[in-house]
Every structure is written in structure tokens, then in C-alpha cells.
Image 1 (cartoon, rainbow, N blue to C red):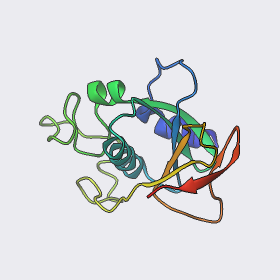
Image 2 (cartoon, helix red, strand yellow; image 1 turned 120 degrees about the horizontal axis):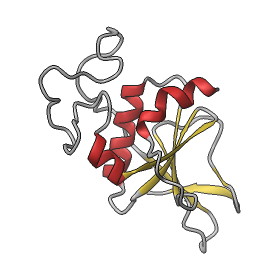
Image 3 (spheres, rainbow, N blue to C red; image 1 turned 90 degrees about the vertical axis):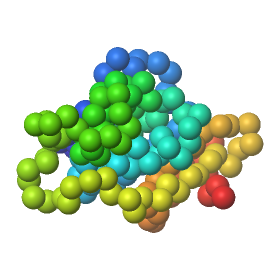
Image 4 (cartoon, rainbow, N blue to C red; image 1 turned 180 degrees about the vertical axis):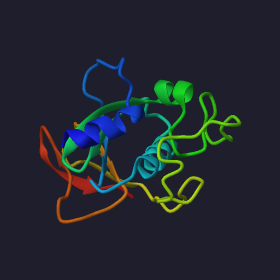
Length: 149
């Protein structure tokens, strides 16, 4: 499981040591770095009020992605360079995996963010996903979560 942590560490803010974030993006364990970066970008675009977002790949918690970190460093594999959301990378630079031939260039556009919220009305915990499987999300404090419209 440490493989995920090393590979996806580029997506999280190493300086974030705050309280656990109010939302988490749960992604399948077989995602590439560029797919995870595109899903993270989609999640941040979907919920503009989120400044901090937990990131989980498979069943491994990677860390906390922050809007500030993404703005400064960009997201690998999405075509965004530091300071740009989706602009072209500077000439001669490439993101991790850019030459592996396994992914098409550009940002995947087929991610639809599925939002769940804690069933307890007093809790503001969110779980964001790009897939739904038999392992439905659960609030760590109250248990069940419900699908948001």
C-alpha cells in the first residue's frame, strides 16, 4: 500500500498539518497519477468552497490536498503548470508518466463527481467519489452517508 503514497504524494500538500478536512475524495486503487490529478481538479471545481480535501486511493489515505498547493504547484498530468489551472505546460516540461504511452495527452473529461454527505444533519462531512461500488462511504463519526443531488 505504500506504493500509492509515494506515487500520489505530488497531489497532496506536505505542509498541511491542520485538523482532518471536512471532505475526502475516494478514488479506486488502480488509477494513474494523471487520472487522480484530473479527478482532484474536478472535485475542487465541483465544490469551490473546499480549501482542503482529503485524498484516498483504494483503501490508503494519501494526505490532504489544498487549493493553495494546487494553485502554486499545478497538477501533474493535467496540462496545468504552477499558477495555472488548465494552461499549457512551459515548453520542455512534462508531468510524471508523460512518456509512458499509457495515457492520452490532455485532461480526462469524463469524471463526474458523486457527492455523499453524512446522514446526521449536524455533521458537515462530505465524501466525493468518481465511482460507486459495493463499498459505500461512511462517516467516521456517525456511520451512514447519503447521496447528494
